[in-house]
Image 1 (cartoon, rainbow, N blue to C red):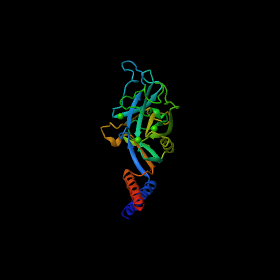
Image 2 (image 1 turned 180 degrees about the vertical axis):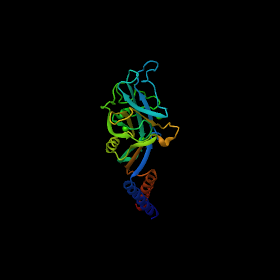
Image 3 (image 1 turned 120 degrees about the vertical axis):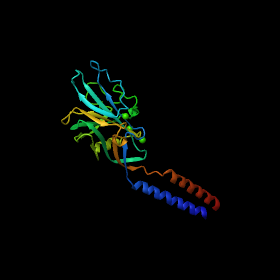
Image 4 (image 1 turned 45 degrees about the horizontal axis):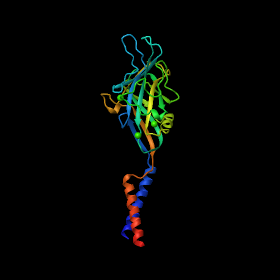
Length: 254
Ligand SMILES: [Ca+2]
Ligand SMILES: [Ca+2]
Ligand SMILES: [Ca+2]
């Protein structure tokens, strides 16, 4: 009799946890400082005069990151920088229902930047400490404005139109949400690249997670999602207890 009561109580507890998990949306901000997150500039500058080739140089520990593109610069060679961002997504995502991004602009407002999502997930494992122009995923030649469209997709634009320094970005972005929902390995790579859209400087500067101003200014993904409705470890133990109780009850009946 006592085990039967225990079984019923455990069953009810698990049932209510399952219902609660299915009904609640999770809202979370994820910076590049979370988990295996990362941020880094890569530079396609081939060198000019006293300035060396930067294509094998890693900038992952810099406090700021840059994007820009000039097909013809004052150096006589192109200037081409992109920003790589990696976000460590929560493990319990079922479906993302809303997605946005914020970066902290440090200089040169009034410019648009293209946000690309890396679709070749075998390349998501790049390291902030080793990424360079020459080994960056979905990268192209030093004189090409866009990332490789066969390995990355452009999700949308955001305008860098506020007085610097300031937070800029977008919320509830459907292309970004759709891209994030294709993720299968729990991490996503976004590439910020120059676009000719918009007037103003060809250069944008944002804070990284290494900014002296703190993690709060790191690039941030805003997510709203429905979690996978699986029992927590605590309720799994309750399930086990309930099962054990059931076995004991059957044995006692027999
Ligand atoms: Ca970094
Ligand atoms: Ca993850
Ligand atoms: Ca991924």
